[in-house]
Image (cartoon, rainbow, N blue to C red; front, side, top):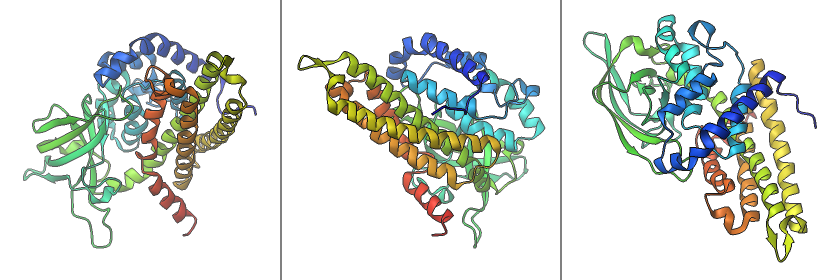
Length: 385
């Protein structure tokens, strides 16, 4: 089937990004995985490449293109190479929408130019040690001081991608108790400078996959945050999270589909070269049948991801549609990558082979951005159940 989701401009960007990954990322990737993070210089190079500014308005140093399709190409090209670009996805796909939607002219002028260049990296802190997917249950607090000029922030966050390297963090905190009829009321979004006294990075968490991206615990001990760093309206933070989570879930769905497709491509190359019992592995019927079944699932996942991508750019994407896309694409990716690893045999368990990295990197897709169980709840609610 002909794929129509991308134009010539998108494909030109794809080739530029592909060359960059081949020359600037792949040769150093093993070193970065061992270090648990990419170097800050990579983010500045990505800024020079224009990756961080595609959706940023021109007056703030960006290209002003209101499309998620360039970010989707990043998902495909990183998966194709079996790498990740540190926390760049969080910086752009997760944090930028909040800044563009909620930022005042003064905030955008202050924050976006360095956002575009990669000099200032953003992260977002939602999850807490005791809450998991229940964001309304967060206990991190931010109370205005007596002067009314600063919030005093106290609490802890965990599983924060890019948290150890971030310069600014969008922190979700309670600025008021929940109301009697709405436990989601009272959450606000604050942009916290990580040089602020009282802010600290706790453990850098050891993960199963995505080893070239730091994930950390964060602590806030009487951190003073200027009131002008409030994003949007006070106490309405949960509403803003609801607005932006669908885009995050679509990005996860697209990444999962891209990883599944890459796994099939890696495996096709492998079975053509690998000999078993004196014959190429590709000549065995089981190999052909397994890869054919994987290809069929990947084709279906691509169709789902592309349809959701078009709906996002058109402004018609509902909350349930990316939940459905995420649930489907992540489950497909889990099955496909597992089967592709099996066809590699013992070599598939070795991290020098990209399929092993994809296997580990992919697993979190069914957890973050809302677990598969949460996606089912959203879909069921949309069905009136």
